Length: 193
Image (cartoon, rainbow, N blue to C red; front, side):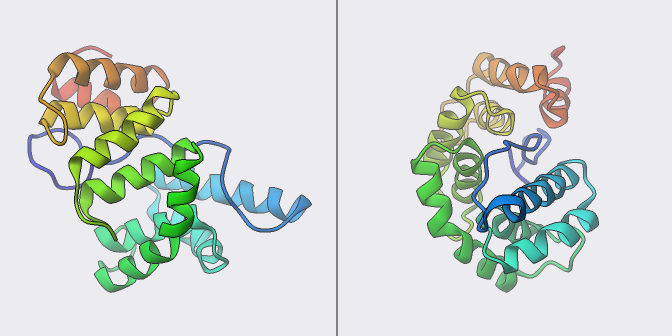
């Protein structure tokens, strides 16, 4: 599911995004923020990290947790910015309280980001079982990014027992929603989407 693990499975989170996000502001300001947030998330998942950073950084500074978490990811993995673990930690720490609250309330994007935080030990102790738990909650709700990440955990046996059939099941669900990373992972596993 993530960046840099080892079994030859493509790493990275699935496709963007739920229209549901937690932003401050009201009325047209919030709608404008939502549109910018979604554009920034879409740019991120399309691999246009510079554009994503440009759109999300002002929102992160304004306290939008989804933007804060994604900016932290970009610093953590050096996507369009110099890798900087201190800045990554700053943004993750800022996002974490709201991310936890929204994940517990059932926001699939927040559950997926929380799963990512556990998977990589980002601002939390690394815990593949908790990553699988949070990915599973969002995957059951049809969130493609979580389905991809959960499928990869099953393919690698991280936090869940290795289970090729379950890996393929979840990756296919995500691929059916157009998730590019899920399709790539199915190809690596030698399976048609």
